[in-house]
Structures are given as structure tokens and as C-alpha cells.
Amino acid sequence: MPQLRLALNQIDSRVGDIAGNRAEVLRRTRYAAEQGAHLVAFPEMMLTGYPVEDLALRSSFVEASRAALEELARDLAAEGLGGLPVVVGYLGRSENAQPKYGQPAGAPQNCAAVLHDGRVALRFAKHHLPNYGVFDEFRYFVPGDTMPVIRVGGVDVALAICEDLWQDGGRVPGARQAGAGLLLSVNASPYERDKDDTRLELVRRRAREAGCTLAYLAMVGGQDELVFDGDSIVVGPDGEVVARAPQFTEECVLLDLELPAAAAEVPAGRVADGLELRHVVLSAEPVAAYPPEFPGTEAEPLGDEAEIYGALVTGLRAYVEKNGFRSVLIGLSGGIDSALVAALACDAIGAANVYGVSMPSAYSSDHSRGDAAELARRTGLNFRTVPIAPMFDAYMGSLKLTGLAEENLQSRLRGVTLMAISNQEGQIVLAPGNKSELAVGYSTLYGDSVGAYGPIKDVYKTTVFRLARWRNADAQARGETPPIPENSISKPPSAELRPGQVDTDSLPDYDVLDRVLELYVDRDRGREEIVAAGYDEELVTRVLKLTDTAEYKRRQYPPGTKISAKGFGKDRRLPITNRWREGG
Image (cartoon, rainbow, N blue to C red; front, side):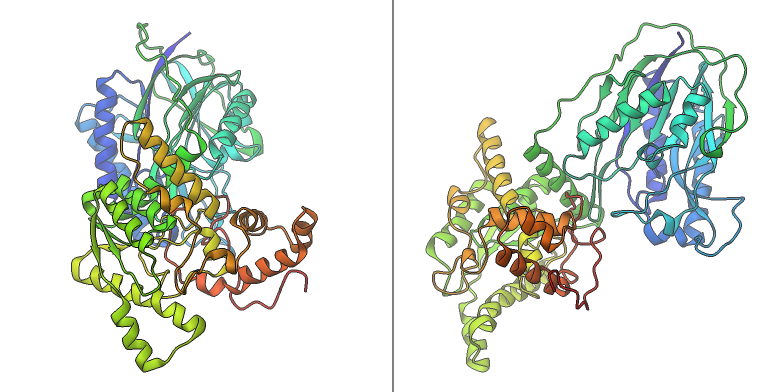
């Protein structure tokens, strides 16, 4: 059988940095050529970054992407790389779409192209457009209507883009009907918990349906709230894994494959869903036989906590670095949330670039102050103490606040202090709120919610504890100092805004609360369904009411890394002004 050496570039790109992304494609292709690759591939919308959101509706941006694609083809040829086929994603435009109601103006498309011999040898657009969760691709794109196939080294390679695998029909059965020996899919599939297992089963099933080897190339990195975890996979026609790349790591996956020879007759006509076959012959003869050097390796899957922690580090690092910041500022209370955020920040950008501030009030316990200082000692982050008691006394002397207003004043004074330091010194503030608190409204506006980014915004409190314990155990296993003080993990959670306060004074135990919230927020279960699942009716009613009435607060919270199937933000879109309540 003919041989092919693939170079699958599991890498990051930067939204809007067309010139930088183009240069990265050129650099990586140069390396792939040095390794003897016969076909090189890059992720979905590599030239523009992903997702581009409303940039897709700007004709200037679309045309810049299209022009960059042509320039890239010429650049590759100028460097002597023109004979090496390169598959790269970009933002394009349909040349055939007729303007109609409900279709994006200008008919932009999520495209990929094959570059060869200094020109664009083949263009195609994503056929299946996702329109769920964080995806709004019906808003931005018109679908592709072709079945692209290229002949490389005597092998027919069918091509697809991300959602083309996730939905039935279209290019997967089309690859079988076209007689392809390889189905190559380029993707920018965002991370969420347990998706790696779902993805593996999907790729196995689609390979069997296509009747050929399937190469699933994924993106890594972060973009605003989204994280891309890589985990590129190649499986054989029987669904057996041939190679699997690590998560959260840029890598060029080099792989030698033996694939069926293409039929003598070039396929033509239409396949599944009426897709028109577009077949381009780049090299009809098999490559000269060679001893395989890259048989493929399978990376060890990450454990649950390691995977989530890796996603949170990746998302935070990407947000800081891609937006041109150098350092971050965190209010350190001595509690578990700020401790985990500080550990994440140190791992993401280095402890020298992390600044922590302890802001004790009259109600702050000695152990909380000590835990904050101990965290700084263990991690090596920059640390200072700015007491808020004098500020608090001044406000109270003028306003005479009581009860909740008095408690929240402390949080808001801490927010003002953090933003003042941020403005003076140039760090961005990280908000330490977790998903449990955001759900039920236990995050003070203009206090706890102050910040440019919320690293654990989509992490329930019970998972916060799990991640803290995992991070410490991981450090111990490597012979390092655990970053989070044990007391921050073991003591009862408390905002410390009044004497002896603990979270369970006004909230259910987090083990119960988080399970109810997961059913309501993540799975959209109604009140009666949650009660039927075995939870106390009065507790469920109270938790759901708290969640519903806190919608206006969540809208004002900063962006943060998404790790669940439904995070607060683009995933979950509910009206703020809303009289509907579960159970009447």
C-alpha cells in the first residue's frame, strides 16, 4: 500500500493576528518539510484564529483573510515548499450564495484550503454548522456544499471541518462513497469536562462509518472564555487508535501511515446530502517506499483533576498573554478560592508576575491572615498587606450602615483597593468567585466581582476543594512544596464579614448545593425534576430562587475559563427581567 507521512500541527493561533498566524504556518511547514512530511495540516480557521465572532461580518476582515491565504501559498512556493500540500483553515466567502432572509450578509464561510505549487488548489467550507452552546455559526456563516477530496502520493484524502464529524450525514458517508483512504478533519473544538472521552468514541465511530483511517487534528490554547485542549487523534478504519497527542500542549504530530491506493478512475458526481465531489489530483503516483520513522504514539490521558487544572491554567495564561498583560493582582483572604486562583496564576505566568494583597478587616481571623502569608511563602508570589479597617471606619462614620450593607462595604473596599493598585502598577485583577457563589448570588457586586478575569468562574465549590487537594498532592509527588496551606483547605468556608460567620449559616452544604445547581444550571432540569431526584423540596425551591434572582449580578461578572457543558456566559442566556419561577 502507498505510504504517507502526515504532519498534524496541534497548535494555538491568535484571533485577528492574521500576519502572525500566517508566519506560524510558514514556520511550521518548513519544519514539517525537514521531517519529510508528505501532507501538512493546521487547525480550523488557523489564519484568523477561532472563534472570530462578529469579525466574520466585516468584509474588511474577510478579505484580509482571503488575501493572506493567497500570499501564504506564494510564500510557501518562494521558500521551496510549494510541492508540499498544506491544509489550513481560514475565513472565506461563498461565491455562489444568493442573498436571502436569515443569511449573514456577505455570505462568510468557515473555510479551509489546500495550498500547493504556489496557489490555492482547493477551497471548501464547513458543511454542518453548530448552533448550540457557545456556537453561533448560523449567525455568521453559510454552509459548504461540496465533498472535497485531494489525491496525494496516490492516496485519496477526504477533507472535513469539525462539526462535519459531530453531526450525522454529509462528509463522513461522503468519504466512504468517494473511496477515500484517509479522512482528515481540521478542528477547533472547545474543551469541556469529559469531552475527551466523548471525542474519542466519536472519532472511532466516524472512522468505521467512513471505512478509512481518520485523522482528527485539534487546536490548543485559549480565547477569552474558551479553552482548546488539543488531544488530536488518528484511528484506523476499525476504530483502533493509531496515535493520540497530549492535551494542552503544542505539538507537531508526525505519523507514517500505509493507506489504500486510490482508484484508477477519479470519482465524480454527488454523495451524501447532495454534496458535489470536488476532486483534485496533486500527485498521482505513490511516494517512493521508505522505512517508517514515526509509527505513532498514544499520550497517556490526564486524570479528571489534572485535566481541569490544565484547562484553567491554559485559559488564564492565554487571556493574560494574548491581551498584552504581564502580571496579575489577587486579593488573598486566606480562603480556598483565592488560594486556588493564586496557585493557578503562578503556574500560568510564573510567581514573579503574581501579586497578592491581604486586606484584613476587624473581622478577619488571625489564621486567615496567616494563611494568606503562608501561601505567598510557599509559592514565592509578591505579597503585601493593606488593612481596610481605617477605610471601613471612615465610611461607617459617614454612612452608619448596618446588616448586609455593612458586610458588603468591606468587600467593596477591597475591590476599590485592588483596582487602585491595579491602576497604579499595571497588573490586572483576578476575581476569585466560583460557580456555586455566582449561581446563588453570593458574590458582592463591585467587591468580589471586581476583576478583568475570573479563573474559577465555571468551577463549583466542591471541585475547588478537589483541585486544591490534587495540586498539593501533585507537588508532593514531584518533591515540591505544596502551594496551598492545609488550613485553607480544611477550615470551614467563610467570607469573614461578621464575627463567627461561615457559609453554611445561609447556604446548604456545598456537596448538596452543587448537585442541585448542576441539575438546574448545567442540565436545565426544572424544580419538580430535581425534587423527584431525591432533593428536599424546600431546599430546591430556595436554591432555584436564589439562582434566578442573581442573573443581573452574573451579567456584570468578568469573563472566565469555561470547563463545563454550560457555563455562565454565552452558554446560558436567560433574561434578567424575568417573572418566571420554577414551581410558581
